[in-house]
Length: 132
Ligand SMILES: [Cu+2]
Image (cartoon, helix red, strand yellow):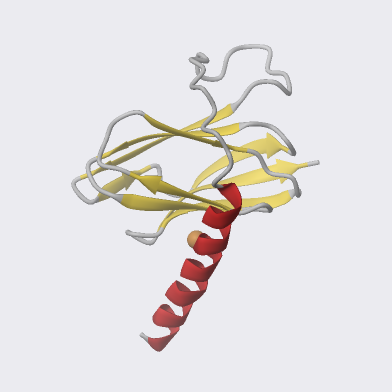
């Protein structure tokens, strides 16, 4: 229990910093890219569709590959308020609303394994292997 609270406090701190850093960032205009078009190039975004309904989350622990500076887009359908947290450098926190088709885009600048978590339900939605 104590450990859990400590984790939450840490995460909240990090979230606040991430929010503070990203306030000037304008939401990227939603581009309707057909999911995983053929002949992938660096310009293609990695799209992760996340669905939160009746307390269940899909996907859980999905594995994806991306490269540094490649756009990663989360398309979220949710029936509840949640918080998405991207454990990357730089870090990202997105506020999920109880709405369909919410889009959050980010890029990762440092190669490594990036976990995308839902903090409300303590689930790891996906892990992205980001290569140089
Ligand atoms: Cu987190």
